[in-house]
Length: 151
Image (tube, rainbow, N blue to C red; front, top):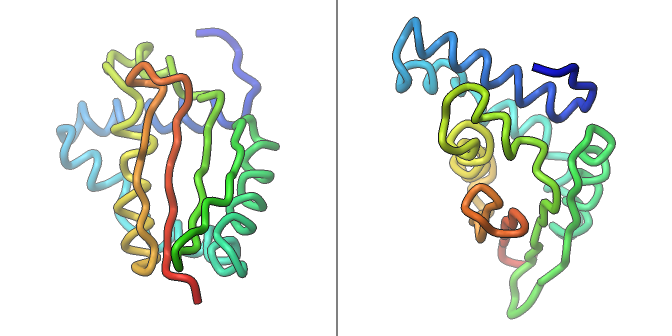
């Protein structure tokens, strides 16, 4: 493995290392349960200041600016319409896209993005979150839609 200085990539690599070790010790299902125990509460604490902004686009733009400092490349588009406060979060460059291969997995999504949807729904029941496309599936971007009824 080469030296990785990108904080996003280092975070993802650590997550895969941890999962690989826990899987060997506990099995994959128990490893997932162990790694993501309390994840919704952690996510709520980290994301509440952003989700609490007047619009989702405003909050997600602020959150994306923080993520981008760490090596992500996100953009947010306000798609509010028909009484819904809504935004698209677009990931142009996925720092995860090939790390999973080093650990013998077919896709990074099961360990990186997939746990976020259920955790966000648990932490923020008023939000509807959906993955629209993923680079790991051959798309040119990853894109996530966030919606809630306008206040």
